Amino acid sequence: MITPSGVWLSANMIQHDILIIGAGLAGMRAAFEGITAGLDTAVVSKIHPLRSHSCAAQGGVNAAINPKDDWHDHAYDTVKGADYIGDQDSIDMMCSEAPQAVLDLDAMGCPFSREDNGTISQRAFGGQNFPRTAYAADRTGHAMLHTLWEQAIKLGTKVYDEYFLLKITTDNGRASGAIVMDIKTGQLHQIKAKAVCIATGGYGRLFASNTNAMTCTGDGVAHAMRAGAAAADLEFVQFHPTGLRNSGILISEGVRGEGAYLIGKDGERFMHKYAPNKLELASRDVVSRSMTTEILNGNGVNGGVFLDVRHLGRELILERLPQIRQLSIDFEGVDPIDQPIPVRPTCHYTMGGIRTNKFGHSEQLQGLFAAGEAACVSVHGANRLGANSLLETIVFGKITGKDMVDFVKNREGREWPSVDSADVQEVSGLIAKLKARPSAGGVKQATIRHELTNAMQEYCGVFRDPEGLNKAMAAVQNAKADMENVFVDDKSDAFNTDVITAIELSNLVLLAEATVMAAITRTESRGAHSRSDYPNRDDANWITHITSTVKDGQIVLGRDNVRTLDNPKYAPAERKY
Ligand SMILES: Cc1cc2nc3c(=O)[nH]c(=O)nc-3n(C[C@H](O)[C@H](O)[C@H](O)COP(=O)(O)OP(=O)(O)OC[C@H]3O[C@@H](n4cnc5c(N)ncnc54)[C@H](O)[C@@H]3O)c2cc1C
Image 1 (spheres, rainbow, N blue to C red):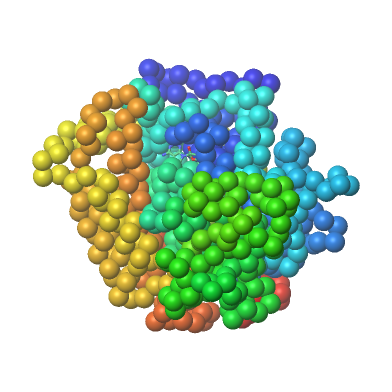
Image 2 (cartoon, rainbow, N blue to C red):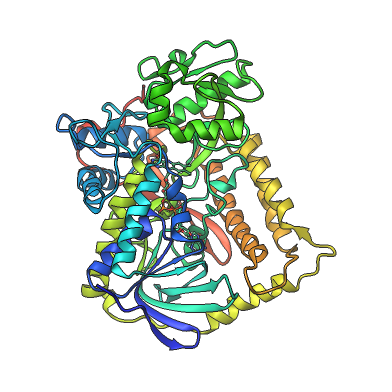
């Protein structure tokens, strides 16, 4: 089936029924629904789809596909992992739909690792009571994204590849499309759409040490806030226990799932002190705090501890963990077959994102949808379980895609919104101003990024306290002021990455401010948000989401209810591993 590839309304204005920004797993899965429902669906991506960060996912995807497992147990593990602040309607939906979502991909040809009897292999992951993580060696995201990309090609999906989102446009409280830049020419286009989906991924680049691709700058979340949507849960940022010590590159939790353990400077394990039952496979927030405590207490070496896989043996390492072995050799100079790998907690995932209902639709901005890491449908609450994010992309990519189809075919989305060419003028004026700014008296974007991301790392990381958070806020205010004077060296139109990274930085600055404001406001410790001045969880006051919106250019915080279900098993309880 070949779908229509948009209708040109003028030289730089085009329309599609459904416009999806982001070609990672969430965007591609949503596009599949639009196209197979016969709607004119387009995907915009600032990089080639196969370069999306989804492709870097290593460890796997959770689903209760083993007959001995039960999706209710998966849901319980997720509610607990989220420290009781995930939305339980979304969590139930994700876990009950998970087996089918994984089998859909299997049927499309995704090369999952298999047992001798032909069933999909599953490994143990943190914070879960059953080995329910399906995987394709240690390259699961790669296998899944290539599978969806094959489908996109087969279906003739229209992809604007190397187009950069600059603004989400609105028409009377409804999303009406987007302004995008064709990166290879610098030309701006206005795309009008009946439904717009943001699937632009997370913003882990806000922290100096992180596992994320350069592209993970939260563009879609920042633009959605500016357009009138709310973001939520921004204070919850996940630090993965095992980033390589020097580069931050990820060493998957799947390695601990295979039996690797953490050791301090003298080769002794330490996790029994912090999580006597689950040890290295406690949830990520718990393991990251334990490692940071050991490092601060002098049990580390050069700011890290070690991940030991030697006892797993050469054969298993070569078969199931080939990529992490190569990464350790290339980036740390250590072959894990013979030596422990130096690791430290590293920013990995942003639980917060565009606030949506359980179908991925924003409640503030009609016609705006979000899926994947950019969304806060809130299945992860205060702490995401490993391998639940790939799952979120394929389950909510599918559900959100279906809801967009319904919105366009049967609901308010039947009518076309209006667009205004003044939006193009506004964006083009901002870019012209940036290019015109002289370097004399200006500030280099690298300086702003360096100072901001280091302050976020130091003062808004694994442990937070009021003094540090105030320092983080001061750094954010400096960055905001400096952005008024940021200049670019490259004044050309074609492939101007100088302009693009400056705009990405402005998105990070907005998200930094909202993150620090929310972290200051939440006076308790829950999941990944750990305040030394409020060390306990405070269920009486804080079973709520903090929302962030932009009003008159200022960030305004609010609250939104956690959606709970009448299930005694999901009632808040002390969280022990
Ligand atoms: C190293 C690593 C390993 C991981 N391993 C696992 C794992 O094993 N299991 C698991 O469950 N999760 C894992 N995760 C998390 C998971 O991979 C991600 O959360 C998930 O893949 C995000 O998918 P996405 O579709 O939401 O966004 P992404 O895959 O990040 O895609 C974002 C898309 O948006 C586009 N985009 C962004 N900004 C713009 C813009 N301004 N204009 C146009 N396009 C734009 C990009 O081009 C890209 O196509 C891992 C993450 C990392 C970083």
